[in-house]
Image 1 (cartoon, helix red, strand yellow):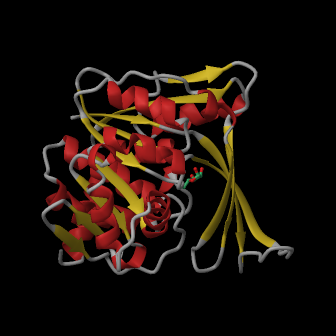
Image 2: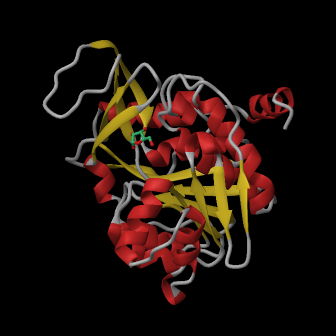
Length: 301
Ligand code: RIB
């Protein structure tokens, strides 16, 4: 059950604040931590912790942060043999503020992530998962050269990614990203299901199978051309939402690589994301499969 993740590696510089600053406002932090992150790294760690053999295809700087990130990911169980240093460039960095309710604001400095270049998935990869913090050309090269199931978490919203939706089997977006892509594509609709269905009806530019919309505390929604299913979230009080969406994507990739069908995999991916919000940071918060299974049992689902 091999998963190849194509994506970003960032050092997360996390400032904990009581309230997120408004534009022009200065606030005092109560805590600071340096943590491993980046959407690609987070999703790879999540898939590995869900017991999929997981390789990350990524670029880091030729700096101390790049060495540290490779070590952190290897400790999480990720194969880092395709995480390559780029001479003269810094490792990506994300400046993150998290408030007392667990909500966050993130600014990413891409560094080496934008020098990833073309990548080739393993021949035995069953799932290839990518996100938008690396160049769209890198994602296109991976998706064009694989027979695996291709998952794109099109986050952050990047209008140029619309050009590769036709190479995607399952598109994963949150409600804000969905609204942005729909607006750029000229799709209108009364709700998330209608907008997702609109993306699926774009002919050659449409994802092949389905669109999954993550809805935070409302759970998630999967839309196919001929049906849809809504899956409720597990009720938790979040401590820290950094990486929760990444956890959902990585867990989903692991479950699909393990033979689950999309609809059956969604409750467990939701459970993994809920557990991820109970610990601080992104990579360190990705839950082990046994913990996710126990959480589902105690939650009665
Ligand atoms: O999705 C959360 C991630 O977004 C953080 O780890 C940060 O690095 C940014 O990529």
